[in-house]
Image (tube, rainbow, N blue to C red; front, side, top):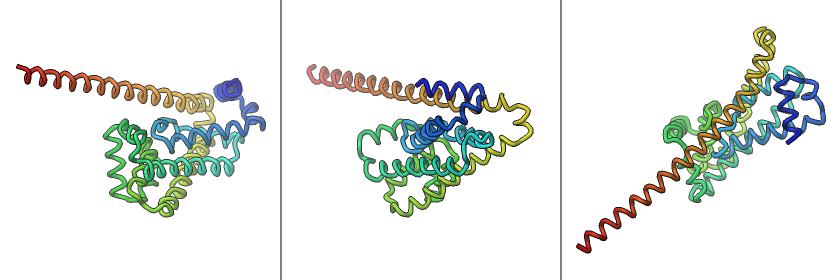
Length: 238
């Protein structure tokens, strides 16, 4: 935790010498890998800030903190594995309680949007969905449920993952070289650092709220059902 705190502090203070330290390189890569993998692979962690994090990575590339070739390879692999996990969950575990619970906690609007996208574009929807938060996590599960062949899915998975990672890192790299960035460098980096943390906190709050809300709803539903059964039994007695 001390190392993580040190890295976050260095990022907020824009201490690029500390961030460039080779002793911390593997830690930075590992954190980024885990976040991108979880965001793409599991519905409960779909709120993790993938897009803004990749843009921040692009900015860090311009500061020579991260090598563009190695980070693209690392994060593309993380995305591919995350989506593969979603596909496996959909194909083999869609009838399990935990997957049903995950899907039931997704807002109906998001679920309908994902289904509509898949029905309209098929596997090509994977490329589009990569740029839509939550949808990119849900779609591989839906594809898995539809029993589409693994090889066909994996081709689109690799292509869409590479396009997503490359596009957002390039956007971050371009941003890092603009005159506006040079003038407002400290403020922009601060924003790009705080934004993923803020998205994470908001996402976590929404997740907890939805879980509590559903539990309360189910509790009152059970109470209501018992009351109805009790009233019905009393009527039969009289």
